[in-house]
Length: 405
Image (cartoon, rainbow, N blue to C red; front, top):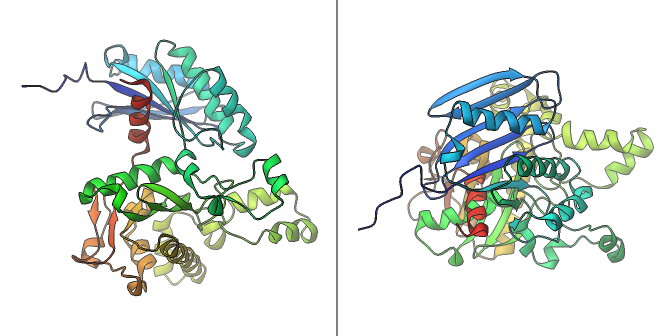
């Protein structure tokens, strides 16, 4: 009779997500799906950084100088040594790194070597805020953990399967080719994880299911997944395209950029800042926290009401469009912070879609969902559910596949 390996011998993966001024990390058991430890280093490069380490059910917080990513990761490794769990006895078989942009060069995870690093750097113009920071984290982690294989998992990889008709912008073909202009998508690790978990939850092969996945957080994206393969997604060359988001506009007439440049005297950088950081829910209402937004709506704030209506209207448009792309719809899955926790948004998005076979059980929908939950009535033509995403677990499992552990 076989027995499960003891915790100290079970393989783990250290997942590292390096942002421009932060490092998010988890020590993950890919078999059980448990986060053995997790943490966050913020305000890197500022006078005082903020560090949080969670292990053994205890949260440790510190404010210390974190001048750069190298020092940030040294602090993280020091917390593992001081507080635990001890990485030396945790059987860490890989370090998994999130990278935002894999372009047309990566359609899956990759073992880090000099050529992979060169390609990530080459793709930096497509994700100037993300890829350089991701690469810094990879190089620092390799220097500090040189005896463990490092694996990169790309946000865009799941969407490399988009048909040409969905991935191609209708601009001069040579200009597009010269400058790598096409639709890459984002949040792909989450969309892939959720669509696969949906099939397991329903006890059906993923190859049989046509799904719409709605990843609704401060950043938000939708995907159409046919038989486990992505055929459409809302984000494009960058994560600015698509749904209305916390601070991003989503879809907008490109001529707005020309108009603001020519007539408002705004620079390209100012317009970039406007569309990415001062638009979306925040731009319309002044608030991008949905809890505050709902309070404002309840108090009769007309700007907040309009912001919520615009947000929901855009989502319904995408659901209708993706229903048409798929031809048949079996599942709608809500995930990420807003999707998992906001029953008002879920109900508002699906309101009026009964003609498409989409129904909602209001009692099942009520409240936050920390576990997979079906929120459509029994026997509904389209199964609607909430399924919490776990990008760190998805990265860990892909890293395990690459290193063959």
